[in-house]
Image 1 (cartoon, one colour):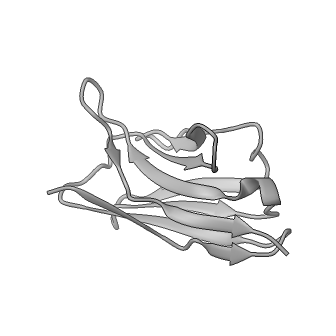
Image 2 (cartoon, helix red, strand yellow):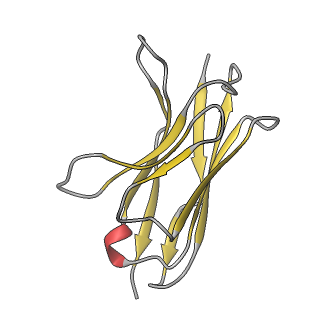
Length: 116
């Protein structure tokens, strides 16, 4: 059974940093694209950052230059380093594994709150 477990969320002051992790189990995803999404209260879920199986990265304009997505295929883990956090980054962050022609895998989410 595949599981994606996010961790690393929490409360941080504006300008601070957090590192999210997503540990996958049940199978390996070294060839799959993986991504981080977020959903703020009352808003739709949005793509934050994506990394292909080959390591090519893409970022939402709102986080470019502040967030860095990476993966460790040996550990079957996805990361999101978030720096210079802003209150508008407050959301539940979800880990995603893309599966062409099938339903994607999703984690349960981790709360990130940026507030003074």
